[in-house]
Length: 120
Image 1 (cartoon, rainbow, N blue to C red):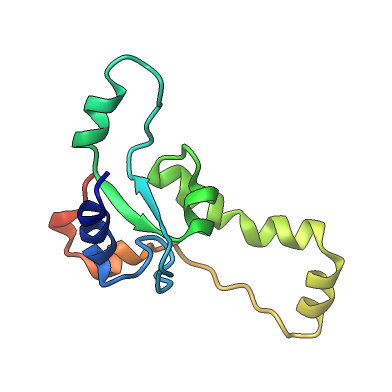
Image 2 (image 1 turned 90 degrees about the vertical axis):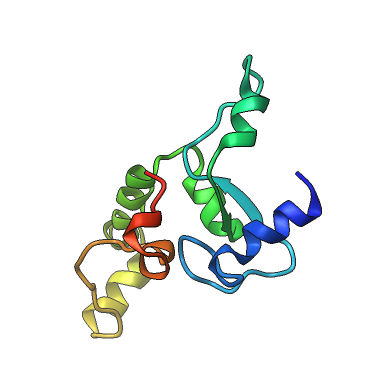
């Protein structure tokens, strides 16, 4: 991928991560919205046509090979996972320092772009 192609992807959401909305640093990841398998016949051709979004390192590494909906579910599970595994979280929660916010996980690209532009 050329430097100019990367810059176009970076600017898709005004330099923000497509998932969390964090302002991207100088280095950022390019995420394949639909996960790609490398090393199989035809992968490089499919890569050229794939929809790609700018992503911060954290979101791209968490997303792994998840679809958008699998990634959304993974994020939604984090509060319960941290509550279960962290005594410090439960203590802060008991003292009212942490409050769980319920509702659907909404990605930055869903707030930023009109519905007609969603690639899936």
